[in-house]
Length: 273
Image (cartoon, rainbow, N blue to C red; front, side, top):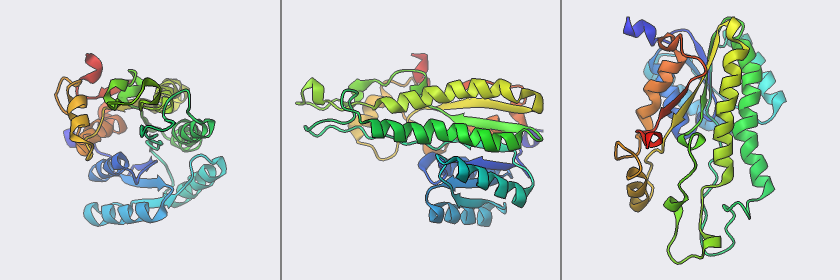
């Protein structure tokens, strides 16, 4: 029974930002559950190689495509091509996002709100929020033909503010201290709003939409930074890259058949404090 509940057999799942750290893990989870991962990123070579690897190890007809999700024409034409190839689309994982850098080198610090460039704001919102909207508009409409699931990858920083004390550098004046840029929180909070909208929009067509809010992933950061982050998490550590696979599989599969419009924090308890 458990295998059937979590099965994605014969389901075509579109994953954006698939070449990234978590995108690869999302693709792995879908393939392990028997689904067909459709991997989207700007780098065709990366996602094509990943698709080939998933095919070889799991025997699924995964595919990889270079698609700029900020361009509606590209999303629309790719959606039509997928329908022609597979006949249906059953799920969407809106994972793509810029991760704006926290800068602090003693010069003018562009991570700070007072200095943050409008061009950087536009680029971050275009990928993380406008891109999710365009993918929902086109791939979501295809999902509505027979029902399925949309999962928006938000963040614990869509639920709480960044603790800017984590990024402080000794010796720098206050106006040069590095911070987590504003766009990250805005985009991730916006995805939660998009989730609630979509959860009611196609509900009569059998489309569910939920948000997954991961916490920080340990990935070769400075040990002092990891220690500081871990001290703010009840479980006392950051996540491993593969620890969100189960939550994603739950939200994509029939195991969550009555879960809709939910915001699932998978953050080691950080937002509980």
